[in-house]
Image (cartoon, rainbow, N blue to C red; front, top):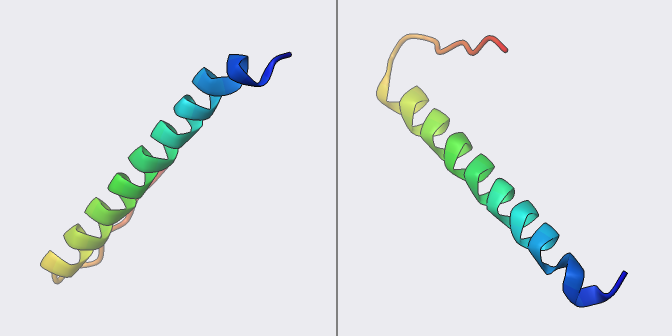
Length: 42
């Protein structure tokens, strides 16, 4: 496999990391803005 052929894979990984960071930030902000405990069920 040539290195340039992995560029799309690395771009997908970076996008997933950014989305995860956005979700974590949203949950932190929601926790700060609400006095009651927030629970997430997966």
